[in-house]
Length: 483
Image (cartoon, rainbow, N blue to C red):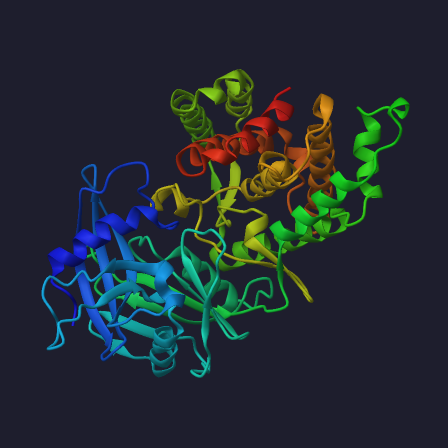
């Protein structure tokens, strides 16, 4: 049985702002109420599924929480405790109080999700669906992925990954919609969808079911692109430079990036080819339409408006504003009809896995700071290419920015090396993408420059709000790109 709602919601209002996946860190929580509460397991421990209605600055966002309830909380779950003894009254004759915690981290309870998915169960407003022909094992133990993300993903053995969407959007989640279509279309570049969880009806009257979770094959041999790229950058930084009289700047710095161990360029090229393959599968699954030239000009105007607003919020971007505005104005001046389609929407090295069979693409939800309408908008595929080019810039400078990771070098030499690594891998990615049938970035320089600068503005705004320590990464890369 749940504790009284006032005690529970007070504890949640204090706990939510400290969670990585909570999207309202830039303002106080005004109120938390419980939209739905569904008991999935009784006893000790008990499991309750909650939809939380979080009120902030006149708006309401909806979050999903698996709430665990125990008399005694083991040490392994202390880090996800929501409230110690939040019951207002003793819940038993011994006078002890219950402990509340985030049960997504409790393998004793998360196995319930597999049980219900395998059974295709309906419990209260919750619907557990499985894909046609899917056979889901129920004997696996979960382990939460610890990487920073806006959702929570659970590994079940080495067979499945279950993504729980924390901040809910109305209707079918893009990640489910796109992955299911690509799975049914036979695309080998995405993990196969096995099942999903939805809420019916959703939190908004008339809004239809809301996707809560997605179960897919887990590619246990995969290594994420970000980790591989960072290892390559580390090798490049550790590579001994030539004598100073051989020269540091210019051509040597770029060409010699291939001399260090762990060169990433071949993988970047293969990733470009895989990206073109996914774009082709998306076009076949969802179709392609033409965006009129007038709407391309409107798109350029929106890019410039975002730049203006971000410069006001983050003054460090202002020195680059002239160059960025020039790119957007150039796009508007040369506007012509553009083919647009479904794309990834938030494409970067953390969204791809290198497996023994090649590159695989994950997470088709779009950029977390965008509205649901913006995430669903069709786009030219080079928008994804621009996102990955920005990710190479991030990887190149991450070790420089992270305090204590790299010893300082005089004269900005590490920054020069970072630029060389990024340039080499950006070129390789674009080469692979064009060779595999994607639109050649070199032949669309105005468009891709505008997309890349749009992404950089988004990054600056996102980092300023969520990870201020990372803000120098996009700003330093812009210093090179706008020079």
